[in-house]
Structures are given as structure tokens and as C-alpha cells.
Length: 315
Image (cartoon, rainbow, N blue to C red):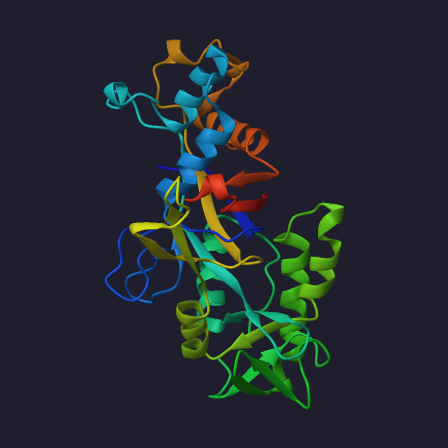
């Protein structure tokens, strides 16, 4: 049983490709998606692996490597049966999705369905003072906005080639939501002040079906090639397409911790952990260790060597 938990937010700074393997459609390498809703996600195994790689890099000191084994589980496959890890992130799910806008360059979009799922997860990990959410989704071809001046022109929001009439009945509610997210979900660095201010002006709540369609058809699709070393022409069969979550996407993942599952002799001399009294204290130490070791920015997903998958974290 997990004893301590909190919410972690991930904000994409470069396109993110959490691959689902070879695709059967027009995209050769699609991203991971939920089976039922088709919303994008990053599976928990990828989150955990990226965190471990950042916290315990190759060539790390033996003590740090041993701490990583206690927190994440044995690093060697041959030792996997020794004990489980004490830290468990969940899948990273979509919360805000940026879409090209006729006014204001782009807008962050979401839906009541996504917000309710986020509210449920946040409540489960004991997040307090959550904002009030709209009670129901906007009507077809309408939307709620955080600021009538943000991404709005002539009482209409135009996203890609689709127009949505603004319904002002929920403006105050969406404004409070945008303020909460800007304060609690976006990174805290001074370089993010513009994003925190902008989010309060450009948050749009769409009908559930429209938001789903944007997350399916408005992702970033890149075409890549591999060249012959000598002739600099494309190698046979070396042309493919990759799907990415766009820059400025906001994801959330609940993270949970429990007591150390390794034998006591494997952790009692590490990080002062021998002084911890009880399972709750150990679980608290696990979350603290991960938060201290994994902060700022990390790389998640594929295409690391071409700069993809850089995300900023907010604990």
C-alpha cells in the first residue's frame, strides 16, 4: 500500500515523442494514447525510467547507486526479484493542449472531461484548495474562456480552422482555474513569468469531443530521413514520420511512495535512513529523495539525441 503521494506536473519545452511502436495508419511512429479516449499519455514505465536515469546517472557513486536501487528497485535485471521499488509514478496524462489560434498565436485548450479526471487524481493524492470547475461542458461549437480579450476576436475563438462562440457564463470559473494552474502547475522559474501571465489570458475549455479531436489531429508530425554518408541522398526505406506532443503541453502524473522494500542491511547506512521510524517516515523520505534528485528539467521519451522530450517539472 502506498502511504504518501503528491502530484507532479510536466511542461514540454521541446516536442515529446513517447512512442507506441510502429503505427498502422499514416504516421509510422505514433505517440502513446489511452485505449478508450485516445487522449495522449506517457506511460508510467517511461516516467520512472527517465527519473531513475536523471537521479542515478551512469558512473554514479556506489552509495547513490544503492540509494537508487532502494527507491526505484534493483537496477540489474538479474536482481529484479530481490525486492520492489518504493516509488511509483503514474501515467502522465494530458491536462492542457496548445492549439494554434487566430488571435494570440495559440491557446491552451482543455475539456471538462479532462478537468474532472485531473480533479479526481489530485484529490486522491491529497491536493488541497483545488479550484472550482465548470459543472458541464460548453454546448456544441461554443467554449468557455479565462479572459474575453485573450484568444477572442468578435466573441469568437478560432482554433486551427474551427470557430467557437464564447459562452461568458463560466468566465469567472475558468479565470480562477487558469490562475490556479499558473500558480501551482507551471514551473516557478523567472523565465516562466510570461507563461504564467499568458495562461491566465489564453485558457479555453472546449466541448469534450472537440478537445479529443484536437489532441488526435493537431499534434506535431515530423518527417525524418537518413542520408547515405557519401552521396548525401536518402537511403532506401529511410524516410519515416514521427508524432510528437507539441511544445507547451501540460501533463500531470500522480506519484506515490511506500516503505523501503529492500532488506534493512541494504539501506540502513544510506542517507541517514537508519533514523527513520516507521513506514510513514520511510515513504516521506522516498518522496523527498526523488524530489531533491529529480528537479528542474529532465528528458523523457525518444529522440534524445535530436533534442526532443525536454520537460520542466513542477512538484
